[in-house]
Every structure is written in structure tokens, then in C-alpha cells.
Image 1: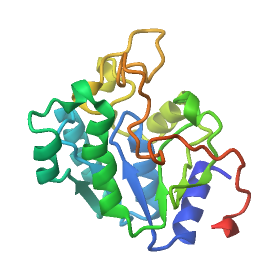
Image 2 (image 1 turned 60 degrees about the horizontal axis):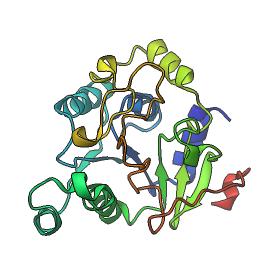
Image 3 (image 1 turned 90 degrees about the vertical axis):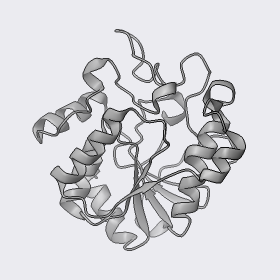
Length: 228
């Protein structure tokens, strides 16, 4: 099943109970474009952590307008919780996992807890933890649909060019993988595309796709939607 077919089938199967979480990263335009052609009013959640590059926020607005996405929801961290655990705004320097928890994991969990299924843009080639990730999996009580699981970086580039989608402004500046500004650096030629994420900290995931702080991959691929 192609990525487009898998996405369309998932949206149909989980009608009214599925959302897309978008990071507005370097290749986010791919899934957003697919959604715009299948269901432009699908709920799309973006974690506005307060630490993004300004270019990412501008890119968000550009894609919403150009693709005609009508149900885009910005999720913000709880202000009181931020004052309690990150009053100076530099928690990312000392406890990056805690920073991701308060700015990403908890806000998203609170916002989408009523859904039963989530669409993600994760791909097998991105990290060792994702190397055998299936298109459909059960994680933390929710169905995760990964339409691009088997795509390569070349597939992403080809799709973006074929549909003339606008690139993320930071991509041309040496940022092939883009997260929050304090935790994202340029990537040198020959480095892994995600080498600039949490550089030197031994961290590869923000925690959204983990359970109790641990990665729990599903090793068996699901062959039928009836399982969900």
C-alpha cells in the first residue's frame, strides 16, 4: 500500500477519531500536502513550544495558507507549569528530557487524549529506534499510523519537488532535521541528518512516541486494518 493509500485508509477507518501531529520540520510539507488532498479539515496539532525558530512559525503559516488546511491547532505548554519547572527558560541545558516533557509530551497528551489514532511523519531511516517501525502500531494505548515509514530521504525530496512544495527556510542553511532552536544545530556534510538534534546529549527522541520514557517498538507488522 502506498503512503497516500495508507493515509486515506487510516483516515477513513478512524473517521472522527484520528489526528495528525506535525512538527513543521524539513519534510513536514509531504504529509500536510497529502492530508490537504484527502481531508483538509483533519485536525492537525502543532506544538508551539515557545522555543521554535521564527522561520518554523513562518513556515507553518505559509503551509496553512497554501494548502488550505482548515483545522490547524496550536498547542502551548501550560504557563503555570512552565513557571514551576522552567522559570528561567533554560531547562533544556540541564534536563532536556524534562524540557521536552513540559513543552511537548504533556501538552500534546492533554490536547489529544480523546483521540484513538494518530498520524505521524516518522520514517525508518531517521533513527536506530525507528529502524523496524511498521506503518501501523499500537503505542501507549493509541494507534500510530506512520504512512512514510518506508520512505527514504530521496523519496521525500522527490515528492516535494514533484508537487512544488515550499521548503523549510532552515533546510538550505544546513538544517535537515529541525526542532526547537536551542536544541538544533547545523549538520555538516557527511553527518547523519539528525546529528544536529540534541547534539552531544545522547538523546534522539523528544518522548512523544515513547512510553514511560522508554521506546517500545512494535516488531510485527499489522497486515489488516481490522486489528484496529
